[in-house]
Image (cartoon, chains in turn red, yellow, green, cyan):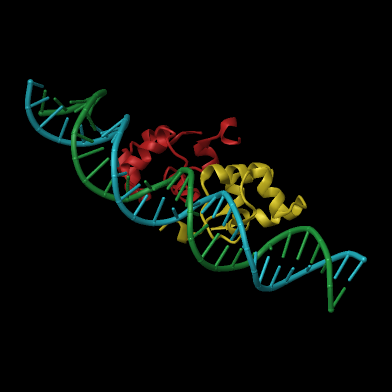
Amino acid sequence: MKTRIKELRARYDMTQEKLANKVGVRRETIGFLEKGKYNPSLKLAYKVAKTLGTTIDELFIFDESDIE
Amino acid sequence: MKTRIKELRARYDMTQEKLANKVGVRRETIGFLEKGKYNPSLKLAYKVAKTLGTTIDELFIFDESDIE
DNA sequence: ACATGATGTTAGATATATATAACATAATAA
DNA sequence: TTATTATGTTATATATATCTAACATCATGT
């Protein structure tokens, strides 16, 4: 699974820590999400998307390996 | 958080168990999801949405309590 | 009424997301 | 260079999603 978090974060000139604070998680959590190191909960995905002015389906890009 | 899983499942005339099998989870997991009893992972949300021919943002409806 | 299939619900086990703290590295500015 | 800020990256702890099995309830058909 890939994500556009980093790209959108840059567009808002927002640091990982600032996004984490807005969303209510740790900075490392955002870092790991950006690196695809884990699979967030739906609510977290929603909060991040909303904070970055987009939707879940726009923010995360799934590939075939996510289906198996 | 609310969901349209049950509604779409009915439209496809699909039982909880059949959906669970297609998605690769237990029947109870689908039941709990329909009841809003927990917050799925993003990948699971994606698989359910894809199996039901829709998107995550169409399938799940968030309310204010999901943001706090 | 009885049988059967679908769903509800509980309790305990396991897997994994997230928190926390600590330290490393990168980049940029002074 | 040094200082500072942002990000990377571990390791361990905690919270919670999901599994599993078992039994209950509900609906429908016979």
